[in-house]
Image (cartoon, rainbow, N blue to C red; front, side):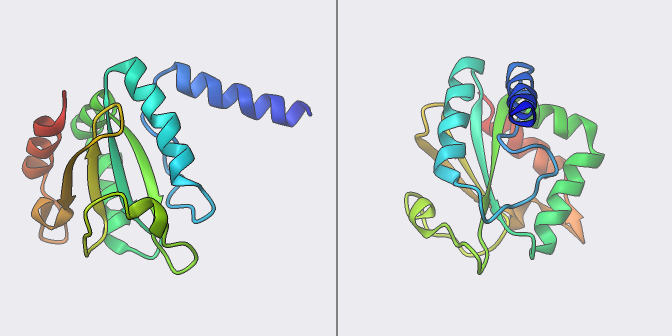
Length: 153
């Protein structure tokens, strides 16, 4: 019981502090998570904080998904822009769990990672293939900044 109370306290402190991801940073794509539950939490946080929601669809198998995480871990300005303007919800897509029911709410897409921008009430605003944000073997800082600024409130 003490462990459960501690975990709940840690989660609440993170939410109160305005963390930007529903799952802890670096948690990756978890096939066991329910994206509908994560989205409901994100919508509540987004509504209270005035931010939008960024769904990041991918999987642990996806090398570009790992590059995207590394990009934000190593680009302070972009990470700050992301955290200030979006609640990030990572949605797993893998053989273990394709999350078809959840993803069927949004326009079809083909490549991973894929980004979907939602307003704080969960309404769909934009669907983005990350190919246009890439440069060489990574992500283009200028393109990423322009994308984040365009979809910020």
